[in-house]
Length: 422
Image 1 (tube, rainbow, N blue to C red):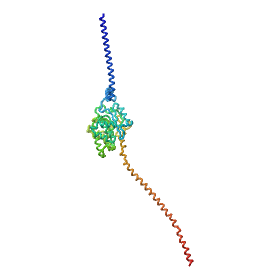
Image 2: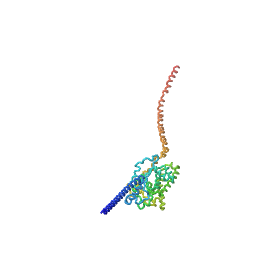
Image 3: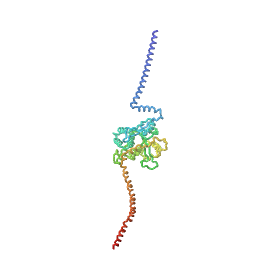
Image 4: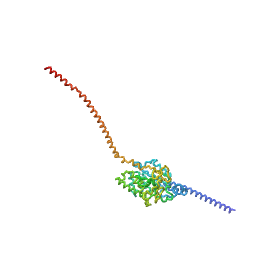
């Protein structure tokens, strides 16, 4: 009887040992899972603290793409980077570290609210200098020199936007623009893997007469431009700017740093007139059948030429009283951006000290000439001085009645005395 009992005890011991081993295994697995969870949390914190949150968020966003097809995430990849650039350079004599007035960047809220997955950068003078030193100081020092020599802040901003889009890409827009639709909706889904530049029309002459201030029948705006980095249109534009600077120096007869540009100097050196020349030349490379900018007149829908998407007037230029632009207070469906035309690039001209030189006040020296008639006024009074001369004869009239005429009467008695002596 003892043998069966010992066998039963042995079985019970083995069962207890097996249960103990399983419990130990479960505890070990549970402990390992807890350690793994804490390690993941700690690693995420470490990534964020080291500035790697962008990569983490991007990875997380990529996982969401399959679940939220209607969300403004890039389900179809764009060639244009998700970056928004605005430029606010300091004017001469202004502290570059001084805070920007809130109302100046008030419109930026529209860009942030409609493009939450985009990186927004407001480029100041210090950042501009750092960018130029990094990308152009050694490769193209003449570009840095021209930028530094520009007196007009608007010309600096013009050149800088071309350089940033060339090297980094994204969407440049002026501080006085309002986003009307998300940037991801600017390009039709079927063209997103083809479009590398987006340009809009700011002026379409159509059937009206030519305007002296606008040299083109159709002119492209540069208050908003979208581009992938490295597009040849920007190298073409920079080359044109450098050539225009030489012409500017030749016409003024002095170096660029001493030139205070006029309105047309800005437009034709770095502004929309020169930008239109560069854009149209690039379009002709893709389509040699294009003759003039008039080929884009009356454009009613976006037109793809090569890898450049040209928008109709309401794309970037709604709200204007010309060019077929909608300006009745409504926002057309095709409107992507609206522009307020604050013209901050014109402000430095008011501060030009040379324009306020007293030399322009020389006409004031002619003021004494205006006072000369006052000196002639006494001449008008001269006749009054002659009036007493007319009265002088009146004073002489009593002289004719002088008593001297009575003297002969005194001599008459003397003659009578002589008669008595005889």
